[in-house]
Image (cartoon, rainbow, N blue to C red; front, top):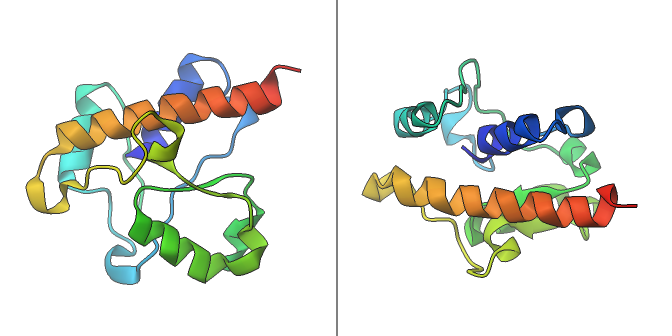
Amino acid sequence: MAEFLFKDMLRKKGLSDLFNVESRATYPDELGCPPHHGTRRKLAEHGIDCSGKRAELLTKADAAFDYIVGMDSRNIARINTILGAAASGKVYMLMDFTERPGDVADPWFTGDFDTTYNDIYEGCKRLLEFIAEKHLKK
């Protein structure tokens, strides 16, 4: 959800060409699977298409990204294990950019994709503001 929501924000601001945004799985459970039907439905409600996406596993090569953003503390732990020191100073938790630091609400057991969408929207908005302030306003 975060990948496509962030890409949509970038597109609307005319910044798509400045970013390479890709999501990765930190566990192999769902490799090759499309986004959850609840995620697809929620994004579609907002006119965001995520068709064609299939889960790929995070690898050491992903440490080359400038920002590596996890949704919850479990993902952050896995990211740090997989990437190690190569990602030092690049790993962030999405909600830590907001006034409500912590984990993004996980809809896996609750089915509450509304709260998850709202968390991710707020986190992506603040992340973009952070990056813009740091890199784009020079």
